[in-house]
Image (cartoon, rainbow, N blue to C red; front, side):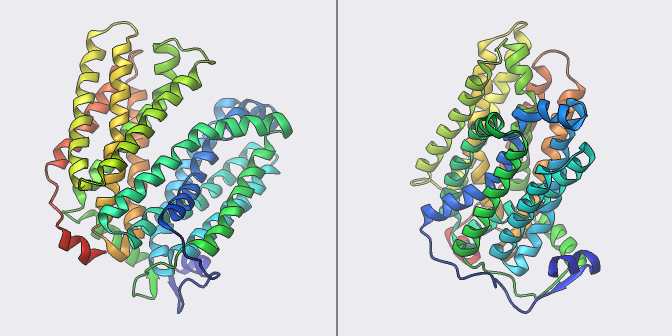
Length: 422
């Protein structure tokens, strides 16, 4: 009711915080696994039903091209949910917002499973994504709430490593369910997954350190967004985060072309090649976790950006000097994508470091920026598509160069400052 009141009146007040269940204490490993399971809800929601699209299009009486709009709509809803969920979690607490988002996701998943037409599916996918955005935006904020900057980098690296398995597993799970009981059962599975997570989150997530203000208003949220965007120390890190996502989402949008058309990979070989990129990224993620034991996360970030720009530069050159399919192109593409493992988690953690109790709102700004710029980069490549990898390599190089230029503007973070903001 409080969430509805905020949407209708633009203001919400509360005299209590974190009123849901009685949380149990978790070890760092257990909390990392739970948070990874929560954030993995999104790749499962996107990838699990992809094997069923052709069957869904026939049953719902629409074209496969139109049905692909459910993916775009999902991203729009996810961005909106992220924008809303972060500020509310700063005031009401992370745990209660995570549970509300998960229950909303569950209800919409059940509704999708009984939908009878494309228009209904489109609306429900949007609402399902809003619940997913509200839920997952609290994950980096929880890490920021309970760990110092260096420890937070380790935890986020572990969460990212576990989460990377979701895009590999989700299509397999979806295909298995599709063979056994049809596409509607895929969304029943997603509903059950969300319900289990809601129960676990309600009982196991720690109570959050929420802000002192008891009033949440639209004007206040917009003011907070503006303050985050104008923070000169944090802004370079936000730009780096956005550049990383622009590269990764561009890669995802171009994967089918790069493997099928450019390299001539068959449909049977495609999962193996696609998985190899993810496995390499996971390996770099583990290297990052090992380096964090002896090196500061900001130092690793700096060297990661240098590696990213170096690989992207060579990739751009190679795409210009090779006219036919080249393993050199794929090799340096692999190096470029893998280098994101040194940059992504470290840049996110160091960005959130500057915002203390407003880390939920900061996460909202970060997530929405990632989705908007990342999607724009993918669209830009499509506009300039010329049948070669050059447009993709160009966008990747420009993103890496921007990340490098802003990396040089990073302010050093002292140990004392880390303690003060934790």
